[in-house]
Image 1: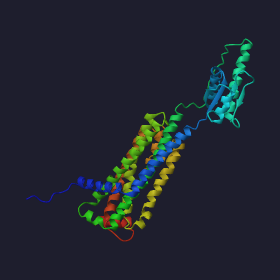
Image 2: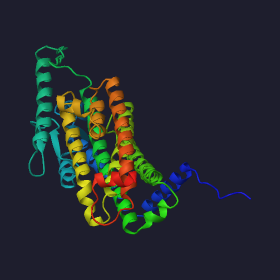
Image 3: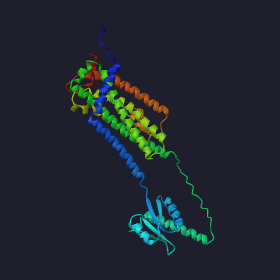
Image 4: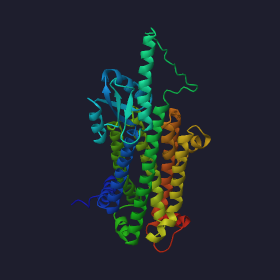
Length: 398
């Protein structure tokens, strides 16, 4: 007769992880926050499209030879960064009707019956007047030169020389903006999922569910399953957000460096994994020191302040990626997940720097999990008031 079946540690961790995922996907706050983040992201993309499409556009009617005035108006509009669309009209009556109906912004009367005249509804905007005046002056000058026997003028093209040439400046700017958006999302998700971990720990302690769980598994298995489950959920969420952001930016033609954009998004996602592993363990350990939700904020506040500091330094790194503050903090555990992606996007980081930052972060995660696991194990079954770290470590050794 065989004895009772022993459940492996991996199976117990998977069970806890599945329980955490199942509980959170049905949680109203999680659903609302996920939808909110996606709505904000789509709104940002839409706003950018609106800003980019805000270039001036002018419809100009022409009573006269469109083959002569049309190209001149278009050329003048291009010089003034105004998109000009020309429409040929039969006579002044048609011109007046087109203006009253709103089909055109103005009409150039240039049928040879007199001096050219610009017909508008109330007043001519600065761009409309500049385009028409410049086109008429250009044609008049060309005609006068032709009458004087001067033709075939070859105007030299003005060469543009930059004192500080940087052909990749726009591309670098796009990458940095993408990284900053990623850091904002990363910061929000780390805060949100860290709070989920902490709240779950306190709920289990206050309801005494943890006593039942620890009857079948060890504290480290419970901690690992909780972190793994919420981590997978957070990873899935940030991958969805990154995919929506990248696909949206490319589809709306907001960026012209798809390879670099995708690389930046992948970098942010990978740093989320490291940042989450670090902060989730700290949040869980801190939460295990209290037994009431009312006391939770006091123990997690130092960790939240560290995240806020990392967030602020991450934005500072965008302005000065090679500055001392950005370089030093990109190697500091807890700060590096929000600083290094920005430095990478700016193209100011050597591969060995990224590798060193990752190694330091992994060492820090291992230390936090090891020490934090002992605190977590000693504090889980202790209820009442707030427990001190020294007391939790002492209880774990008993």
